[in-house]
Image (cartoon, rainbow, N blue to C red; front, side, top):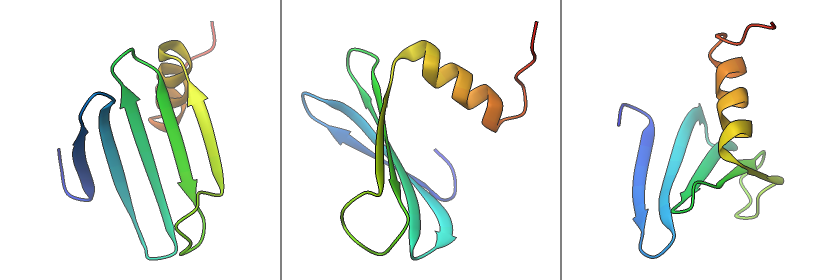
Amino acid sequence: MGKGVHVQDLPGVGKKYDVDLGRADQRVSVVVRTGGVRDLYVFASASADPTAVIELNEEQARKLGAVLAQTFFEA
């Protein structure tokens, strides 16, 4: 997928994307479930437990992605 993004198939669930943020104490994982729901996991420490977990539907994920990519425009 690209440098710093690791993809793992999760049989019966979907795919998991681990994003390397360049720091050992910070990382983000996204699980894209077969039905289209996305789970965003934020790790702000070296702990195995996420600091935050957010469930996003497809529309919410697109909005967040657009903001992060600076392609979101208000109508």
